[in-house]
Every structure is written in structure tokens, then in C-alpha cells.
Image 1 (cartoon, rainbow, N blue to C red):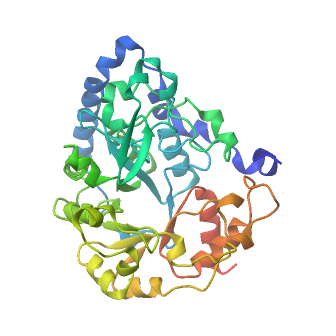
Image 2: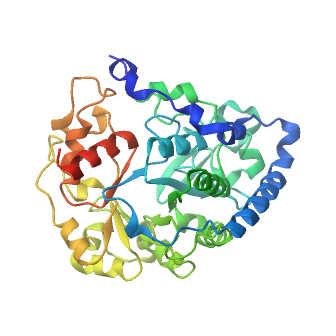
Image 3: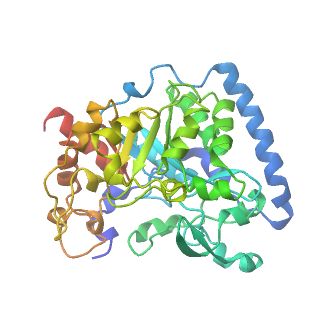
Amino acid sequence: MTQGESRTPARRAVLGAAGAAVLGGSAVLGAGTAQAVQSAVAADAAADAAKDRGRGHGGDGRGYRSLPVPTVIGHRGASGYRPEHTLGSYQHALDLGAHVIEQDLVPTKDGHLVCRHENDITGTTDVADHPEFASRKATKSVDGVSITGWFTEDFTLAELKTLRAKERIPATRQENTLYDGRWDVPTFEEVLRWAEREGRRRGREVWLHVETKHPTYFRSLGLGLEERLAKLLRRYGRHRANAPVFLQSFEPGSIQRLARLVDCPRVVLLSAAGTRPWDFVVSGDPRTVADLVKPEGLRWIASYAQGIGPTLDLILPRDANGRLGAETTLVRDAHAAGLILHPYTQRNENTFLPAEYRRGTDPTAYGDAFGALKRYFGTGIDGLFSDNADTALLAAAEFTTGR
């Protein structure tokens, strides 16, 4: 059974609702137009920013405590349905009803922040099909891991804009490949302008959840992320404590740096218990994630952040058979420290679900995602990242109403 056979009705597109603003950004740039990209983006951004400043679209002042609980965060947009980190993916997540939309930020060679989960763009763009960039393929060590591919920091924004986005895991999400090539790699400034336009159209603020990727690595290249991010947030009025944006990073040092630059809410991401944040490795800090999730570590995080984003396994570990085990004390301990929890990542496919919620033998087919979500929400988490925002929203509604 293929991915599409089991759930075609649940995968109906709402592409029409995305509108011309999204599709307009997908025209392929010819070689003769590449030089005009940066100036066009800058001019458009300046015009939109001036309008937004005049209309006061920096948030309505309610802050993150006003968000629904559980909060559903569109993970890389609607990455269960569209190629991740594209304006099409962000738009679809918003149209599905996600409360918050996530972006991951990496820099270009000329210092622009763009939205990609990794700086290695081999699997998420058609860069390998561009012979003019064949010589850019390289092997690098990123956070101690050797990677061979093409990297955003080796491309100018104009060059990057000649590429098209594609589905990252086509063997698992075959239907998503229909949208390969529809969108380019968006800059974060383009996303900010999109969010402001959508906010005006809908009459409400559009929340973003923004991650700095590999900040220590990029700072070593002279491409520090935090200052560039703070500058953009200030330009669009999203730097205040009540602004509709979360800032997140797996490196606590990046969050501490951002805390000195802007006032918007901040979240420390936490990987597997035995791992160490890369900035800890570089600085010689011996603490692991297991140390950070103890009450003392959580109090330390609460001194500069408002929340944590742990892997779901830190809350409900899986046993050797892949089944969920006994709940840890992390939710209780984090709440005691005054922190909210936005764990990651909920996905519908069998291959990602705990063993007891898988259905059938096809790893790409949907399992009992509702059953798994009920278990997760029952721990008391404040929200979660989901590739399938519509599923998570329905499960959250059923959980809050006691159905």
C-alpha cells in the first residue's frame, strides 16, 4: 500500500488559499535576473516594513500565555504535506489552523538569513541538477559531523534564489513530490513580510517559532546569526516581550545571546539525554542534556528563557521494542521552574510512531496518530511541534473537551 492509497481525502490541497503572494515567489529566475534579486527583495522589504510600522503590526500585546493550550506548532510549516521550509509549506500550515509556524535559519555567503533545516541543501533543493554549481560540492565538519554536499554559506542569496525546493524524504512522503520545484528558498525577511500580510488579512497576529541552526559553527565563519536575527526582528517590530514570535536553539549560548538583544520569548531545545549542546562541547562545559533536565538545570534555563523544547522521548521514553514507557518527571519539574514545554516532533506515519500506535506493515502509511497524541497531551505539555497540524489540532480539541 502506498502512502496515498490510505488517506487521499485527508490530503486534499488548499493551495488555492495560499494566493498569489505565495505562488508569485516561485517563478524560476533566469541567469540574467539573478543580480536583481537582492535589490528587489530589499526594496519590497523596505516598503512593507514602512507600512507595517505605520500600522503597528508588531503583535497585539497579549503575549505567548494567550496562545491556546495545547499549542500546535507547524513543524517546518506543514512538512507532512508540502516540501519543508517553503512559503507553500508555511501557508498550508497556517490554512490548516496551526497556532504557530516554525522556521529554521541558516545564512548565505553574503549574510542573508534563509529558511532551511540545515545548511546542507543537497536533499532539500535541486542544487545537484545545476552544473554551474558542481564545483561547490564540499565535505565539511558541522558540529563534529562530517557532511558532503552543498552548503548555504557557499552561495550568495542571488545564487540560492536560482534553486528550487523539493521534498526531503520522498520515499516516505511520495505525494509531497508533486510540489517539487514549486517554491524557492525563502529568506526570513520574506517570511516576516508574509506573516505581516497574513496577519492583516486575517485580523490577527501570525506567530512564528524561529530556530538558530548551528550558531557556534556559523559564528566561527564570521556569519553570526543572532545579531542578524535581532536586526530583522526589530525592523518588523517583533523584538518585544509580547511579540508573536518564539526564538529557539539547541545551543543555550545562542539563547543567552538573543536574550541580550531582544525581549521576545525564548526556548532552549533539548536533544537526547546523553548528548551535549555543541557550544558546551566547544567551551568545555561537561554538562549533558541529562543534567539540564534536572531541577537545577531547569532553573538555570529559566534564568534566561521562558521554555524548553525537549524531544518527546525525554518525556515519554521508548523501550527496546519502541513502545512508550513510564513518564518522566520533566513536565512537572519544568513547570515548577516556570517553563513551558514545546516538545518535538509528532508525525502521522508508522515509521515515526511508537510501536503500539503503528497500524499495518507499511512504514509510510498513517498509524494511530490520535492515540499517540492523546498520550502526549496527557502528560501536561503546553504544546508540540507537528508535521501534520490538522491531525494535532483535532487531537488537541478532543483532548481539551474530554472526548
